[in-house]
Image 1 (cartoon, protein in one colour):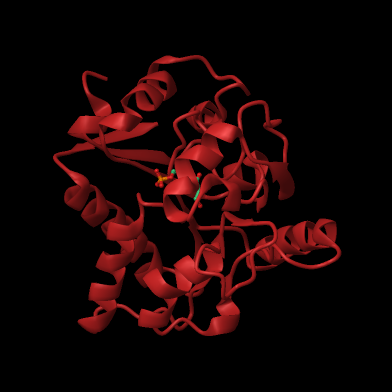
Image 2 (image 1 turned 90 degrees about the vertical axis):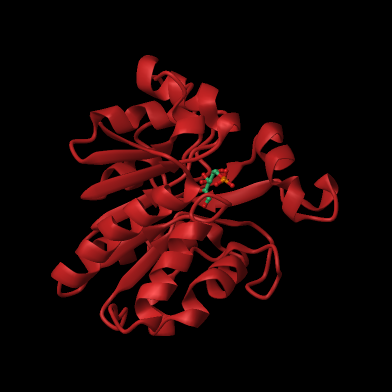
Length: 241
Ligand code: F6R
């Protein structure tokens, strides 16, 4: 795992943007794997800027997001669809039908999971996957204990994850208890992975990732077995690692 140490959040976002831009410009039909949360917001702003300056087009790009809450409609301000639309999709020229998130509503969520996997492989798999990391080492919504062999599936969210995400909701009671997430194996199928980490509160997670053993009790640890992973982290998150 290559580690890129940067000064701050802005630099992390710029580095990540450069990696994605490279894929978007060089691939005929680039496939991006995207994440939500606080960490990639700066990256999305950078991408929007590049598009607005006429340096980038997303017309041939397909995206697959990592996850979605179960039970939230697309137009719910807390759904990840809404987040992606507001923070990226509505500002760029990506065709709507090329921007994919698993649907968290419907009668047959198992089928949603299978169809999502199929769609990713039909697109030729993800060229570059953006990841954040949870305080407990989760990637996507793959909480500790998730099998490394997992594909897109429905999960019960950890209480710690619900608490961490409660900041976006009126109260913790409104945070869904379930989500759909790409599995760990689905993520590992990406050709390249960019893990973004910023801020002191992620310091312990980064130290455990870099120095700890590979174990299902710390999902992100599997990334060390991927041949093409870049960890872009700022000083605050890296500490003395
Ligand atoms: C979001 C996701 C999560 C976040 C992680 C970090 O799609 O899959 O794994 O990347 O919870 O969240 P932030 O960036 O808010 O610290």
